[in-house]
Amino acid sequence: MSSGDFRSDCRLSGKVTVPYMRKILKFLSSMQFALILLLVLAAACAFGSFITQGQTLSWYTTAYGERAAAAIMLFGLDDVFHSIWFVVITAFLCLNLIFCNVIRAPGLIRLWKAGFVPEKREKSCGRIYGTSEKDPAGLFSEMGFRKTVSGSFEDGTEYIYAVKNKAGIWGAWLCHLGILILIIGFGVGQMLKTETAVYGVTGQSKRIGDTSYVLTIDDFRIDLRGDETVDQYTTDFTVRNVSNGDEMSGTTSVNHPAAMFGMKFYQNSTGWAAAMHVSKGGEEIQNGVVCVGEVTPITEVPGLSILIQAFYPDFFMDADGEIGTRTSELRNPYYLYIAYYNERVIGMNALGASEYITIDDLTVWFTDPQSYTLIQITTEPFSKLALAGGIVIMLGLLLALYVQPAEMWARKKDGLWLVTGSSRKGGVLFDRALREKLEKAGIPASEKDDKEPPKGSSEDEKPGKPGERAEEDEKHGKSGEKSEEDEKSGEKSEEDEKSGEPGERAEPDEKAEVSGELSGKDLSEAEAAALEAMKLADEAAEAYRAAEERAKKAALAYKEARERAAKKFDKEEQ
Image 1 (cartoon, rainbow, N blue to C red):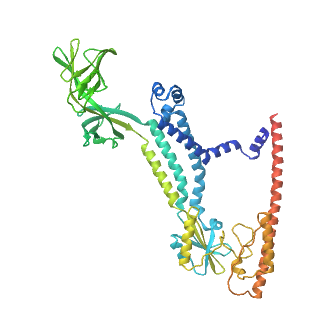
Image 2: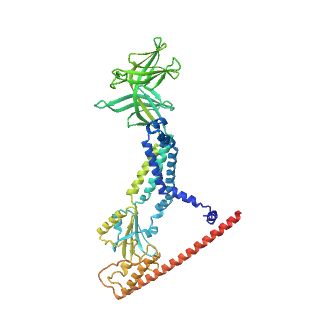
Image 3: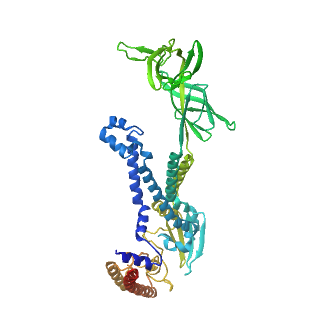
């Protein structure tokens, strides 16, 4: 397309339209684009699961090799779920869901509010299931239709109409909305959530990060199985808000977090701790609980600090000088310590329970070894939004799978009720249920796969319109013999099928056979009706061909108008 053609399209429409933008928006809201995004996200999640996250380049080099480590760092596979490309793909998926829901919502709202009314649904009444002279009103309640609407159309045809399970039309839409809410809730929650940790021994109180809350460890227990292996770690604790005095107590254990004050408390890990004492000149000047792996400054000497590198509750040393612990019981406790001065190591050794460290005029020793608990504390402000998204998804699935919209009709013409119905999602089950009810009610079921109910040959009904059919079976299809006109009609039907011209119809493939013979008068009326139907069908086909010619002429005129407008526009620009 030339630039002139593009500009002329914009001018002739009366407003600025950008075809390429429409195509882009259509693609962004398409199912194909959503599937591509989901496949990419699935691959990304697989990488995030198989590749250990949050490690350094040297760690990845050791684990995967130099080239693989470089690729992992280059593409952000060391932190997949927080990488820019993962966030961008997720944002596009959200955009796809938003476009999809925005485009579909108006049509669903119109269908919900005013779509299921007899006048609008007349052409969608489904196939004929049976005919009866009895009033089929009771059949509706047996099929689960609680509310029916009765009336008559402009041609005088009486009807009974009912619809059920309208809510089912919202199933897929709600699923899309739930996925969108879940992604937003989880994604924004991950970006805004905070994590901190509090560790200590029973009786200690520590502030939770930079908040006004203080956590006190009331008790810590390690439950063992019969074979002396660990079964569970449990911490009883109390949280107090120092700003207003509010206080709550709770218990957390592995896989059983506690929640209070908008925070979740997870039992994360445990380890060993001991009381460290520092004396000078025989007088104790410092003491406190020190956990393994924690560096503790000596307040008397700036720059001096002590680290408990490891703790051995049942210490041993073999002939090669290797040290370890035989059991987890406190039988022969030893502390492996490192002394630092201005971040330089000045001493390192294993210290027994009755031994001490001497640094100048200071004496350091350890007592009362015990287990400490580490509690991880998180705040996830959008976790409830993610939960709401999951609930909406479940609701949408329930509506889509178990609430199947269905419609049912009964139309009366010439004293005969025609029972029809349709269900877009549960068509097979609806078909089976309706046939069973018809059989139970003594209404003969139709074996023909008619898509629309027959209509009479009143003057205001014109063959060729969608949803209309001559009333062959009821009026003149009761004879097992074919008239000469019927044979001609069948020949014309075959010609119509070959020509494929829209607006032309074929006669029914078969006719109902009932006992009895038609009188001469009835036969004449039937032949006249058949000839009239054929004549009207020919007229409809001719009208279609004339309309097609007019459409071609209009398209040619439009093309010429575009070319003239483009030339005029280019001339004005020059």
